[in-house]
Image (cartoon, rainbow, N blue to C red; front, side, top):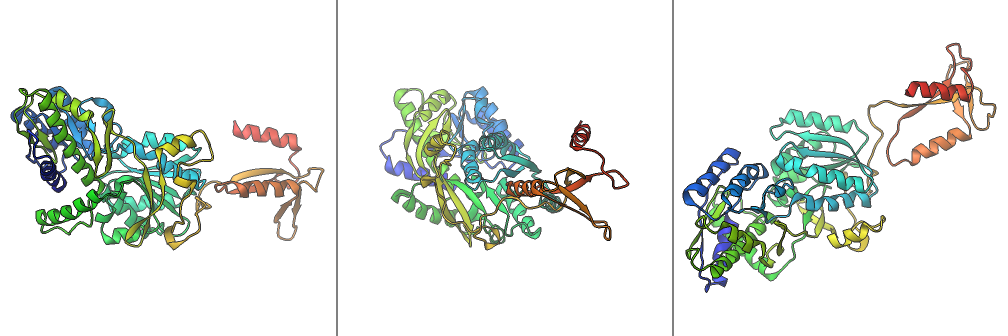
Length: 484
């Protein structure tokens, strides 16, 4: 709310000659889907608004956008980022980057370090489920496989989370990609540390939703996240951003005297600010084109939502907003197919109490990399040195020999006829078996060169009395029978 009210006063300070004025009226959904839908319905039917800014969450937007479509009133959200929301209706506008915009940046990190197995951890919600098809496709494009999906209920207990951590710890994959809301992600990292999974050899990559809110996290959570990598939309530094941030901090402290002061405007705050400016511009253009269709006051209301208007100009207001372009606090404001246009991403490393940039990924370089399999899309095709979990500077190999799991059993003929290639020797004293030879050395070398762990053992092809069970051909037939 601080970002919207500040944007409102700033906009009309800079545009005092405008004939229209937006007036803010707020509603609180208390984070509930039903309250968001009820508030939106009231605003559409009783207040007869022309646009709604909100709701904040993707799960709430799922309900509200249907109401907007029926009423022909644009629903404009700067924080509901699920990719699955946008195609449902042209009356839903995402003035935030949709989550699918970041998946190639996440995949580029995996590609850069040549990891080819990932554990995907996401929450069981509209926010969590919406991105997974896009992440799966991005990993498939770089020949990386999702070896396990950990789906965390939003109501999961600490015991459930800890058990899930221990389960993942028994697997060979050590690269974890997380897409979770801030409260759930905070609990995950605290439990991961408890399970000793924030140590050397582990890789944790988080999506922009958590990186955007990093500086609002509890200090104990930040301490548990040391060495984590993440992506975040790149926000160009500007004198306007710096001066606005100073005023925003003061206003936030005045509006929330009992709340811990915020160190900076997060990305959602920047998008909220730019959204209000875009809507105010669109309202002025709509009135200018149709001077009799709107009064000179446009109102904003909602449930974590803010609304404009008088219920008669929604389609025209939507059309005007979709055409609005300007340089905002978060960068270039330009809507393409009802969504904020794609952006470059920072690659960030959690180090101490802050975030350290280790590289930048850009869509332009990504398009070039699609034509060149060796390219990743990073500026200079390079990432700076990273401090990994456990304060290690050694790049994790991405896997470890699993604690549990079946071994690959490799059949070896007892009598090959060529002992220099394969030789099976038995120690009559200990009854132990020694298997050697050129083929054995070659097989060991190939397994060791694989980018993942394979547990295996050599099994002599013999009868119960220790005599040979047959030739190479017999061994091959036996193997085929076992496989079928």
